[in-house]
Length: 296
Image 1 (cartoon, rainbow, N blue to C red):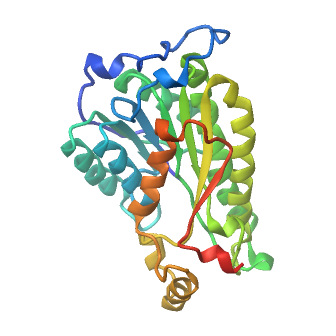
Image 2 (tube, one colour):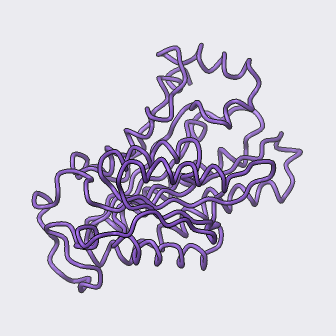
Image 3 (tube, rainbow, N blue to C red):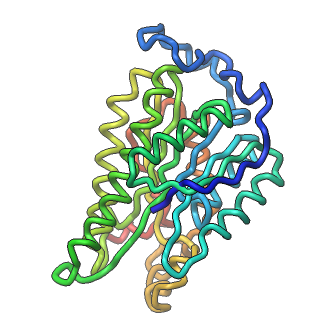
């Protein structure tokens, strides 16, 4: 889960960031306008604006940096978590993004709260000049055997991982439909297909996110908005370090490639799905697990 109230503004966007991409109409254009020729859209993500939820740490951070390295302005959000100074980590990430020379906006925002999400997206559009890519990365896990899961543990995971993504998609749908251009990538999990023990809430949330991905692709496709999901296997993040060593060793053993992913391995696939090279891909789930699910 991830939020935004306290923000850190990085660079003041110049007019080059505010101008709509070539071949894309400004926000507010009539929804009935003729669909643009995709060939005339920019060939790269350079000069666009990406919103990455939960972008302070882990995979979200790697994704934000990947976009920035390609010249994309980046907005990230975060929330405070127990026993973790996420605000400090967000500041470090923001500093790293600024060093790459792109406009950045960073703030607290709880994706579970629809009003906060609406305000965050509005501010991103005002400060960075629009929103072209959305990566729904914010997520939580509260593991436990199904018969021991509390209602609170179930609800928080579903509210963050599914409703949070829905809130963000809904908030950007209007601007993306108006400009008749957008890319949305939802971060699912290999455990949606191959759940382990004690993750009923997490696996259910990621399976639901895949259903949301496909439905959103159908609804937004006529407006030239691509919606896809990436389903990573185990990724070397802080969360992975909290798992028992035997779990990591088993994941490495069961992977065809004999390793778990680096965050950059997944981030590059996310960036690809937001590029014009993937303009004819929508409603798909790209599994990035080193072959882990091949044995399922």
